[in-house]
Image (cartoon, rainbow, N blue to C red; front, side, top):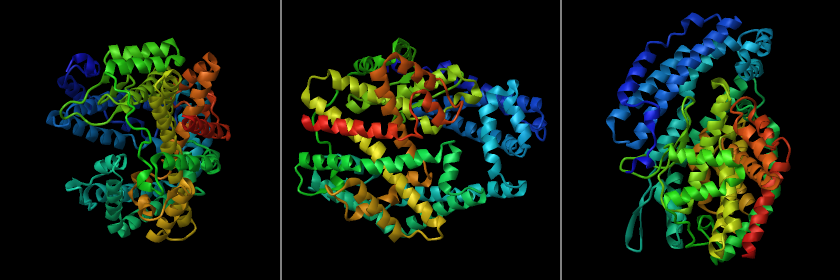
Length: 583
């Protein structure tokens, strides 16, 4: 492998020996007992936070280096050991600093307000504001201790489902045209995107039959997980599990409500798209095992990595010269590990280190998807770059709520560039269908999931049980609502809820929907308004976690407490569909 296609881990540590040296030094400096019981004094609070930061920054570097070296070659026992060591040390670090949050929360409101107003503590003002909001939901010391003790046991529902889904699910080998095909999560996805309809139907039914065979235990596991969320919400004096989840991200309830209502209003456009897809596929009846089949085959961007990267740079030119130079810098200075190699972790990600630049893992192949993956992951990285450069350590890390915004902005700008410049009609149709599918799966589908979660939690909150029957009936109702009359929703699709791992992280999926809504609005503003929109977007990229994520998005011109960005996103979908149909 040419060195220029590998990431420069030596910028973090030149060797494992240096890593171990710093690890051993850090291991001896994890005692925070001198600050315990003293956080009611502003100077002691400041010193404690600075001590945490100093060690936390080292911990971050150790963690990321170990992860990156492990992911270069997952077979390497040496890097396995580094990962295990830092995980254990991280747990000890967390244990030794666990007193900080409860002790601060227990302080009188007047003390916390004085901390917010103290210029010396400015880098912690948002952190303290969040603690102040939580005070109404803090219990007595003994009650909080009991809840804390229950956390490990209560987290078992997710672990149980993970074991069911990955170890115990009785997926069979299916025989098709004399060929034996072992069914797995991976092969199922490939088959569902394939041309062979008989194979899709057979795989679809066998796949869901595996979940149906375990539906009693899966129903009980999910019911337990929902009851856990409802219990914690009641114990902490929230009106609902949803309210507790939203406050945890500092997101107003109106954002969630806007999403559900505006998506419901826009469903006729989705129904029209599904009808068009049915027509193009030449189907008399369209089933759920048909909806993932591409309607444009044989159109692909088959580019060498260097050409693909140059295309991304060209597509992101509306973001200006500084962004362009950063993209070049990332390639030239080896932020990126580019190609697949033996033992390398699959997939792609971006990881940020406060004291160095971000890094990106790719497994580049000459496909359209991988061209967009470059744009996507560099969006994450440059978001982190600006946040780390502009914010103090305490405010640099942005919330999950906005984590997919910058990456999706890049994808939208790239696809807009390609649609504006591409002469090949077939490739243009493919790109339009790519955008339609991106919106269908990220916006509509995730909102369908969000509605289902809301039903499940409201059912338990009203004192009713969750059963395999009412869960499956509600999911079928929603599937019919979302896909309309063009798709036959009967049959095994009503059990799809039983295979969604994200349901064990309650009220997480809606963030995918709000993320793409925000990205579409920002990209549209950049393309239509030019430099003023770019300037605002750069302010957002530089804002890190310095305020509520909803407030930070307003800097980029997106107000999710208003329905306008939601409606604008559906206009993009409708306009794209009309252009697609015209071709």
